[in-house]
Amino acid sequence: MGTQHERRRDAMALDRSSAQAHATTAAGGEAPRARPEVETLTAYSAPLEGRRGLLRLDFNENTIGPSPKVVEAIRAIPAEHYAIYPEYDGLREAVLASLGDRGLSPAHVGLFNGVDGAIHAIFQAFGAPGERLLTTSPTFGYYTPCARMQGMAIEAIPYRGADFGFPFEEILAALDPSGSAAAAAPPRILLICNPNNPTGTRLAPERLLALAAAAPTTLVVVDELYEAFTGDSVLPCLRESWAPCPGAEGMFAAAPNLLVLRSLAKTAGLAGLRIGFAIGAPALVERVGRVCGPYDVNSFAVTAARAALADQAYTDAYVAEVLRARAWLLEELGRAGVRHHAAGGNYLLLWPRRPAAAVEADLRRAGILVRSMAGKPLIDGSLRVSLGTSEQMGRFWEAYRRIDGLA
Ligand SMILES: Cc1ncc(COP(=O)(O)O)c(C=O)c1O
Image (cartoon, rainbow, N blue to C red; front, side, top):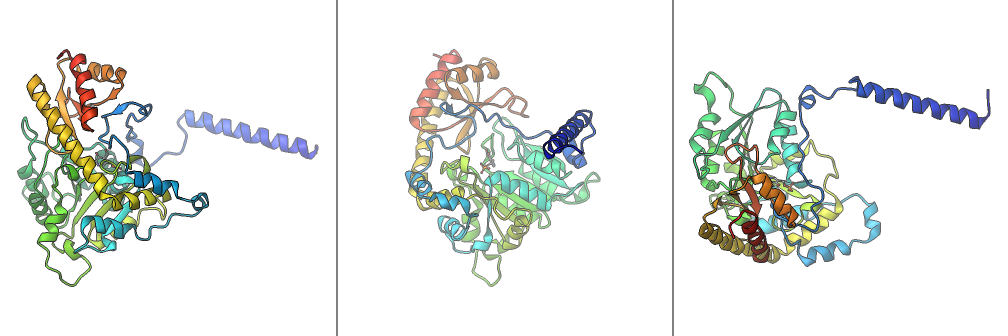
């Protein structure tokens, strides 16, 4: 029999040995398998550790932090509110107010744990094995694993020529594959990053809407994460051509297959809090919401987003400062004869004289992070440099000239 203490000790020993057996089995490859699509997937990992305290020009984040009003609002959250599940009342309305709400209702706005969360949910809701994602190359890296985890095929059309022009005719042709034997059905999802990360390629909103109109059975997603730096959004374009009419679609009546992604990460400085939006016809937004958890967006992100949206002047001033710094750096690059490419967005590509990996490592040693584009089609050998304030770009340029032997 033994004492109660002995019985508990024996039970614990049994637990330990079965845990070890399980671990041994797992190491031996007997652990439960994920779906076949997941078994062949490599996790999307970005080198995100050890960046604090350095000049972060590697992920196109806001480089100075959010509005002081955001900080104040977060500090004002009473500790007992941490214990309550988040409430979203008024956040969709605040997004609409920032966009100009004519032709839109709260049902047009989906809230997500960053635009990454929106992208993941879109693929979960719409992507199925054997269906096709049509996109461009090179583009934002997270689209590919999201398509793969759903078992989708990916058709990525390269940007054109030395200035990475948008492959409009090729995309248009791929949207209607009826003439080709290879692919009988139109793509399930067309995903365009506009302006594109990392090439900066811009597509006029009218042309984007023409693509959406050409493929009514395809879900067309436009990732407008960087539109604030160019003003290329499809939303004003839809609003201008909208004549109020009955129906829930509002200004998306002309584009019921379109979803627009927006974030507060890169402009308003909320990347660490994770909040993003998908804007589109209520029927689409509702479907994407079906695959999300009820509280995927946390209370800090909600409070911060409300405060950031209420202080548009702060974001506008930051964007204006980045554009000033960009103009200055472009002049310097031109004068120094450095090969570079800058179009839309708060980033540019440049091709160092020395190997890009060595320049990236030396910049890191000098306290400055940039992102090597090694392995990316068309831009292998380049560095992507995010743009910050004039002072920060001055620091970058001083270090870069020294490190790449331009001084
Ligand atoms: C094009 C693009 N889309 C989406 C994201 C992710 O945005 P968020 O931080 O809102 O998840 C990024 C971040 O780098 C991006 O560059």
